[in-house]
Image (cartoon, rainbow, N blue to C red; front, side, top):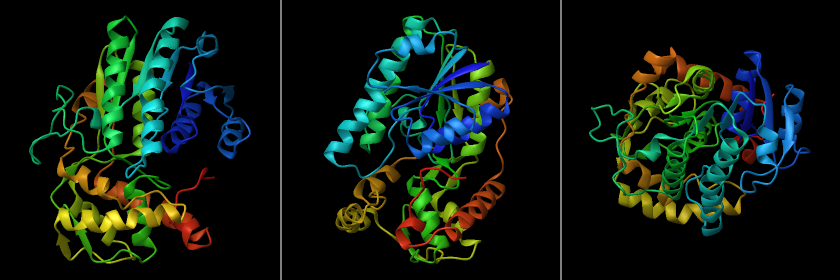
Length: 347
C-alpha cells in the first residue's frame, strides 16, 4: 500500500511512520523543509519526501496521484496560544484541511483518512456516561485549538458530501513519551521532582489514547475503514485525579493533596504563561489549560474495536510504559529546559 502522509514530522506522525513502515507500506511524506532534523529522520526511515505546504495547494494533487490512501495528519496543537499562534492554527488546521482534501479528490485518491479529534464533538456530557461518534458539538469552545478543529471537521464533512471517499479518525487526548501536550509537560515535571502537591479539576474525565495504539488505529483505518464512517480512538476513561495517581506510583514529584478551584488556578496561570514563553517554552500553564477542564471527554472506542479490530492497553500498562520511556529520555538530556521540553526527534 502506498500512503501519502501529511504531518509526518510531529509527535503522532513519527510513530505513525514507523507503524506504516513496519506494515510494509511505501510512505510519501509532505514536508516544508527536507533539510530539518525531522525530515532527515523520515528519509532515514525509508520515506519519500515531497516538498510542500498544506496551506498551499500547488503541486499537491500531482504528488498524490498513484497513492492508495492519503492520511491527513498535519495540524497545530497548543493551549495558551498568542494571537499570532491562533491565526496560524486556523490556517494550518482549517485551510490546510481544505487544501489537502481538495487535492486528494482532484487526484482521484481512492481513500482518505482525516485525523480529527474528539474536541470536534466537544463536551461528552456527564462524566460517567461515555459518548460515541453521534455526539454533536454544543457550540461552546474552551480553546482556540477546539475551535480550529471543529471548523476543520466541518470542512472534512463538506468534502465527504462532495463525494470524497473519506474516513474520519477522532483520537482522544494523545499521550506518550516525548509528548508535546500538557500531559507531557506535567509528567516530565513529576519525574524531575518539580510537581507541587496541588492541582485542579480532579473530577474531569477523559479517555487518553496511547500514541502507539493510535498509530495502529490510524493504519487500520487506512487499510479497512469504511469511507463515510467516523471512528473514535480512546483509551480507558480516567479522571484527572486518577491520571495523577498513575504518575504518583512512580518516584518524582508529589501526589496532589490540595485541589484548588479553577478561578484561582486560572489567575495564577495568567501570570505564569508569559514567563514560560519568555523561557522558550509553550504556555503549558495558561488560562486555556484551566478552561478545557470544564468539560468531559469520556468517549468510547467501541466502534473502532468492533469494526477495525483495534485494541488498546489498560491504563496501568499504558502509563507504566510511557513513564519508563519518558524517564529514559529525561536521563539522556542535560539542562532544565532541554529535559522539560519535548525534542524534535526521538531516536
